[in-house]
Picture 1 (cartoon, rainbow, N blue to C red):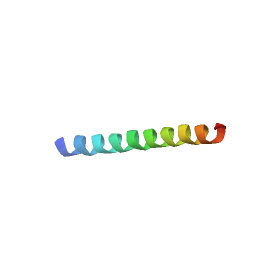
Picture 2 (picture 1 turned 60 degrees about the vertical axis):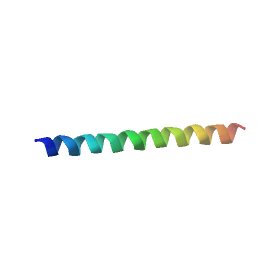
Picture 3 (picture 1 turned 30 degrees about the vertical axis):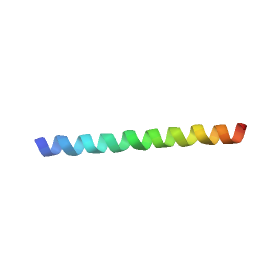
Picture 4 (picture 1 turned 30 degrees about the horizontal axis):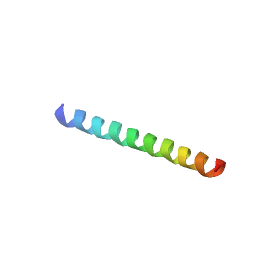
Length: 35
């Protein structure tokens, strides 16, 4: 039970980090194009 919950949290954290990375990349790309 504990192990399964831990794995789910790790996957969720990984997805969050991936989303943040993509959003940050898009923001930098837009700033670079418009500058």
